[in-house]
Image (cartoon, rainbow, N blue to C red; front, side, top):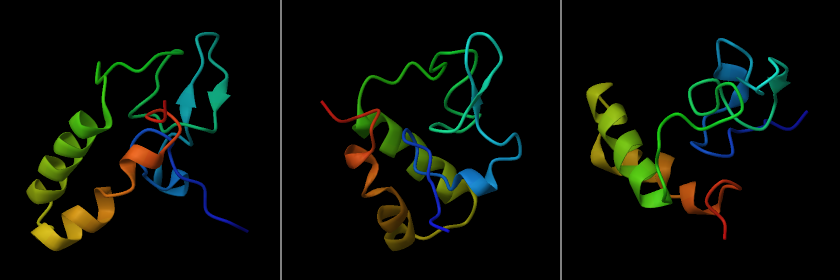
Amino acid sequence: MEETYCQSCGMPLSADPRGGGTEADGRRNRKYCSHCYQRGRFPDGYTSAKEMQRFLRKKLKEQGFGPLKRWFLTRHIPTLERWRS
């Protein structure tokens, strides 16, 4: 089975402790993770992929990831559905 990823941050949805985000009516959303999508909206307020990349790189640095690994894990963010124009 193919792994699915959050279409906002790129996190594997299998790693989401809540199993995905939620719609306004409480239904589970399988396109976005629970960190990015809550009650039918994106609470982070980011308007660009660059903002998301900066945020994620900071978080990954806090978790001890080096610069190359941070770049590798976030380079695809602009291709995710939330950020495509």
